[in-house]
Amino acid sequence: MLNDLRFALRQLAKHSLSSVVIVFSVTLMLPSWVALNTTGEPFEGTGLAPEVFVEHPGPDPTRDPVLAAALERLTGENPAD
Image (cartoon, rainbow, N blue to C red; front, side, top):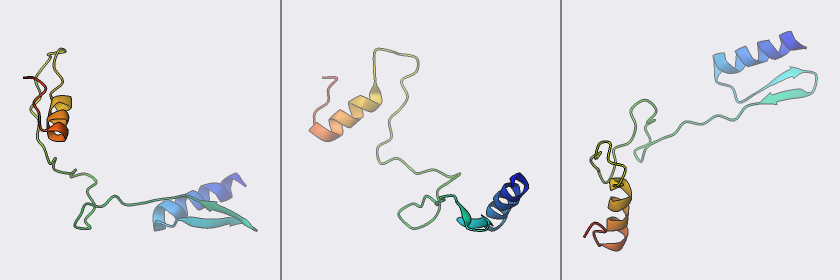
């Protein structure tokens, strides 16, 4: 049985199958997906460009520029003022 499982896993990896019958009526199913950007291209390995770029402040634990940018975008106010 273990050899059948190993074979099934190799077949899944080799052929990008989502399911394979192992023995008799036992079917192994593994979900898979490809994350796509808005143009339908996969973005794995390239990432997505941010809509709002926020500079990293360095090792300043008193500021959270990402939170401040999000609040400013949501409320239209600068919370640092």
